[in-house]
Amino acid sequence: MLHAVSRSRKLLLALLSLLTVGLVMPLIGAAPAVAAPPYSGYVMGYFTESPNQSGDSYALHLAVSQDGLNWTPLNQNNAVVTPTAGTQGLRDPYILRKQDDRFVVLATDLKGRVFTENNQYIHVWDSTDLTAFSNYRRVRLHTMNTHSWAPQAFWVPSRNQYAVIYSANNGTRDVVMVNYTTDFVNMGSAQVFFDPGFNVLDADVLVDGGNFYLSYKNMDNGNLYVARSTTGAPNSFTTLTSGLKQGGAIEAPILVKSNTTNTFWLWGDSFAPSNPVFYAWQTTNPGGNSWSTLNQRSFTAPINAKHATISPITSAEYTRLLDRWGAPQWNRLKSYNFPDRYVRHASNVARIDPFPMDPTADQQWRIVPGLADSAGVSFESVNFPGRYLRHSNYELRLAQNDNTSTFRADATFYRTAGLADSAWASFRSYNFPDRYIRHSGYVLRIDVLSSSSAQTARQDATFQVTR
Image (cartoon, rainbow, N blue to C red):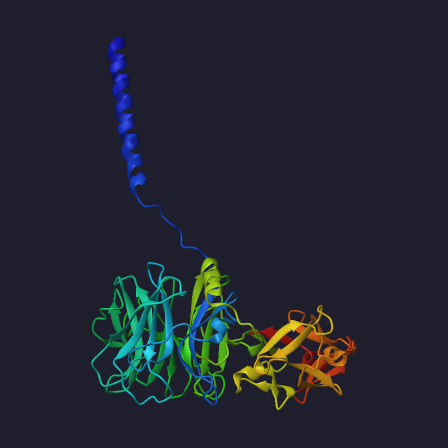
């Protein structure tokens, strides 16, 4: 009996052991599930143009942001990679995070401001984290006698493929075309993706849960629109908005979702090649028709940026981008009550002028320790090193530092909390401590201001230190 019990116990233990191994072994052999890291920042890709073309750069530029609204251009706002084939220039870059958590960069193969040339190809790069770029190639999208503008891509789970969409003319009108690919090398055949019956341009798709939101420009009336599909399939989109527009002309919509709130932004930039100005709206319901205009006080785009792309990034990726490319060694000063204007020098007069402006460097300043007191600051010109903003007869001018005590005192200011908004900045004169830098008739001067000064005067004396 004891032997039988012992044998039964051994058998039971053996069975339990086998069951345990059977349960555990698959867990040991399976790859652990890794949660996607949270996104805490954003990267923007763009090319640049300026009014007199001196700031034109048909190559990929990058900027980063922590809040998705205020941007720090990288590499001194210089290009990080330039095409070497085709036209040897790019427009309309697009950055996509692929399913393997690496990036692919797409761009229009076009250099300059002439849009009559047809091109069946686009530029493509691969990148692990946008600190380097590899496998540069041009891929062919179609055989039509038309262009391939503003390529963009998104993942379609039902197809297990990426959709690459772009603007082209199908022989009837301007539509959005699509090719499906798994590797951005073999692009598949082209087909119509979005044709609402009128000319459209610059499509952008944001995938949010089970919704595919498509923004586009209606070329017949010049407005931007948002449409939605629950499948992302060709010709499955229904337009939701009644049309959005700011400025004289607008194009290149970008849909972005906030990393931290249920806020969606719609960006667009000026159609005029010589006027690289961004506009923006926001909503908490992209499926509705309730976009509110963002004041330009709320955001700052990189200098001369055109037709951008915005993608969320992790904290580690944000840090690597800054470490690799570097933040600018200069700042700009944005006016609080005229947020489309920045402090610049013109014929040595300090003033606020509308952006954009040429030369670009007229609005760039090195904010250095105060010449008379290192606890203060002085503003050195980027394009005229050794020249600083100083007051003379209470007006601010750009002047060569003669290293006298009077010059050093006139060129030194104390940064304080903004008189109109404490999140911004105001600048109090070192040697006339009851006076602050302000604009009057768009010209900068130092005036007596106090807490009882008129609201307009306090706004005139408030600036955002940005890049």
